[in-house]
Structures are given as C-alpha cells and as structure tokens.
Length: 405
Image (cartoon, rainbow, N blue to C red):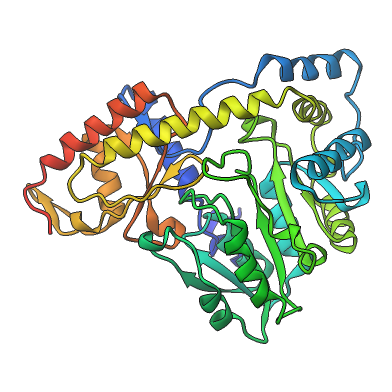
C-alpha cells in the first residue's frame, strides 16, 4: 500500500504560494459559517448581481441552444464586439485575430506569461502589485525585479526608476492602471514619460492590466497601447468582471500582436479550450448594453471612495492617499507595529489584519501579499452603510491597543 508521503507533489506546486486574497476570503466565509459576524473588506467584487439586461443575454443563449464547444479564442461575434469596444472607447484598432477570450482576465495573464517568457528572463513589476503577478512569473520560470513606490508618490513609478531597472535580461513589464491594490491610475502624460524609456528598449513586452478601466474617477482612461510606438509590443488585458458586476461569469479578454494572440490561443487549446459558451453570450450582451450602466457604476464607487477616505481619516495612525480608480484603499499602517493588547503583540500587517479579524470581525488583506508590508488593502466594493459599520469596528478595536509608535 502506498503511503501519502510517497505520492509527492511537484516542486512547481509546493513552491507556489496560495493567493492571500482568496485565503482571507475563505477564512472569512469559514468564520461566518461558524456563526461569527464578519464584514469582508478583503475581496474585490462588486456587491450587486449582474444587471437584468445582461442576464437576458444568458437566458437567450440557453434558449438558443448555445450548449456546445465554442471556438478556443471565443465566438466571432464576441470578438467583434470587443474589437468595437477597443475602437470606440479606447481609439485602438485590433482585428478579431488579435483578440482571445479566456476564463477571466487571470487566464489571459497567465497565457501571456507562459507564451512570452522563458526561464532566465526578467519581468519588471512595480510594487504594490496584484498578488498573482509574482506567482505567474514563477510558473513561467522568469525572475522578478521590483520597482518600489510610495504612498507619497501615489504608488506610481517614475521614468528614472524604470530606466534604472531595465537590463539586458528584461523581457516584460507588467502593471495595472487603475491598480489593484492601490487604485492608482496613470495619466496620459505620466504614461508618455514611461514610453520614452521603453522606446530605448525594444525587447521589452508590456503587459497592461486594464481590468479596472471603467472605474477611473479622475480622468478618461488611457492605455499605453495608445502610443504608436507601443501598440505592437503591448498586450492589453481586460474583461467584464469589474465593470459589469460579472465576476462569477469568468470572462476576460486580451488584445495583442497577432503572433502573441495566436500563441495564447494555442496554449489555451491545451489547457481549457474556449470559455463557457453561455458566459460568452452574456459578455456579448454586456458589451452591447447601455453605457449609462458604466457611468452609474463609476459614480457609485467614487462616492464610496470619498466616504471611506473621510472615515479612515478619523483613525489615528492610518496614512491614506486619494486613489484615482478601482475600489481599493491601501493605507500605510506601520504606526501600529509593536502595539500590544494583553500578551498579543502586533509585529506586522499580518498580525494587525488577524487582530482586526478576530476582535472587530472585519477582514482585510495584509500588504505583504502585494509587495508592500507596511500597508493593508481595504476593498470598498460594498455599501456605504456596511463600510461605515466596518470602519467604526476597526477604529474601536485599534483604540484597545495600549500603545503604538
């Protein structure tokens, strides 16, 4: 009889860390099941169901019998709608052969990493970064070089930092704008400064994660692909999850140089094949829906951001900036490191998040998951009423700590 220890897992999976956002969400659900009153500020997911007009697309797809295997790169009508979206909303021209529909933007990203990177290649990632960028680079065999940012710089890199980071081994640069976890969004002028650097290094592929495009509160979203020198070396990642409250439908899409798009299609054909047929038709309905929906969503989350910032300002020791987009705040909380309550000591953001989960019943994500150990991520994808209740609980629990620096 084989013992379990004889059936060893691969080094690839044992060395891979679990996503801390997913881990915290699971812990919060487990505590709720156990009867605890938990408010989750940990998961980046809109708190309302997919709009009715979009759901009608799913019902029609079922009635019309879309229950068979779809094309690996997505239904043609959906890719046409995505190409039209890029043209009308972003002033970007893509053919349908340059677009691949996948099981969420996350699959678009890993497809791109695996199709463009080799062991020994270097990927530049600004910090804070979305949790999966690091793991995806590791799975591809590439190494990661970080560019650190600060809250005083609104978590944005400078052209000088970028120039200093690029080496002969640099193969890719990956970033999100608006950003998860900070909400930072690059202006056209800021992107232009980065482009000047990239133009000197034509071997670098740009992976531009724009899943929060429609949650930009300060200015019209701009893509680095809008610069003529960058379009043919940029992979744009997007999807319907955040903009249309469709997280569970798992539809993302990418637009890329055709050879990269075809490579991702080839890889996806061996992994998952095409994304769910009914979900694709639902995404088509979303892209064809009334754009006032996006305007209302943007307004709603801007109000939630402003409300949360005012609440956070009442908490001593939390340093916060005003992000331009997404639905996250990323306050610096290092003032609470070394604080104590009884025999419990808060040594880092992990300790602080666990204390607030246990004492306040509020879940948040420690910043080390995003490469910034002095911060925590707060997702405000819930109602203002619940946000206010959560922050009041957090403030009350923090006041129990008997000292902080």
